[in-house]
Length: 277
Image 1: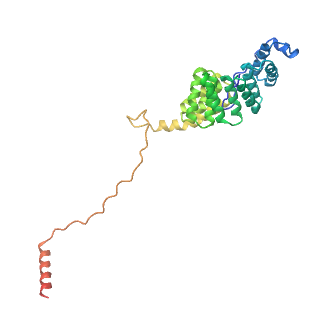
Image 2: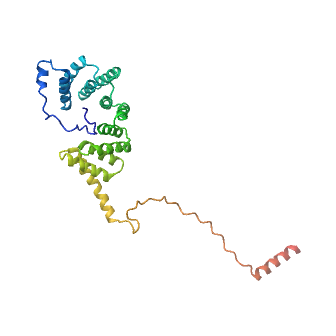
Image 3: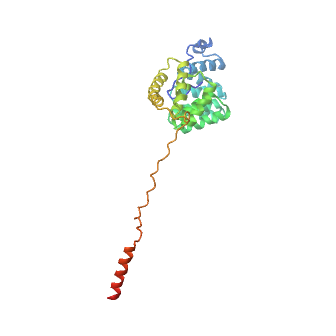
């Protein structure tokens, strides 16, 4: 029941309009309903973001049925929703000691680690959950953790896998666009942001980022159109080759002058004078 941990903390589609079951009035009025009814109502309240009300019911169920993994899962989720991260981690540890660890419990406590800045702890618990069961929501959360750790390529792959199973999730598409842009894939970022707005036209942050990205891309497109590549290179990626200084030419040698007869004659006379002296 945990919200998706997106880069802008946009929650899953709201379920606040979902009508609570008739047992809710009985639960709040008399407190004598079965634990099943209490747990059902607590989960609906949790999904609706009414964490404090949910927590009251969950603690009550936990006192009578502490062996139920579902109670621990929802309890950790409610504490995370209330921002009580240390209590959420303590509740997770208590559940593990009772032998109630489940992949959903690992996923929920990962949000607590994430909220208090422990990215390594969040990643390890999400990967542990995914070893048990491949859930796209947990993959989306793992992608958000990897993005915050600066592993943009890995984050992009997790978002892509999650989006393949949850294509109509606006926050996930937004995160996918952010990761694509971080890895230099401008076209992929444009497509993902457009999909986020197609799902939720009121998604202001996606609209702002998409408009800013279009403004940044327009000059590049104009430059590309003004300077088309030479024939035969269209569609290829041009690589810059490092220029090298041309080899230095060897110093010029003086030109050789042929020896003339007059030169020989002067040399002979000079040699005769030296001998006679």
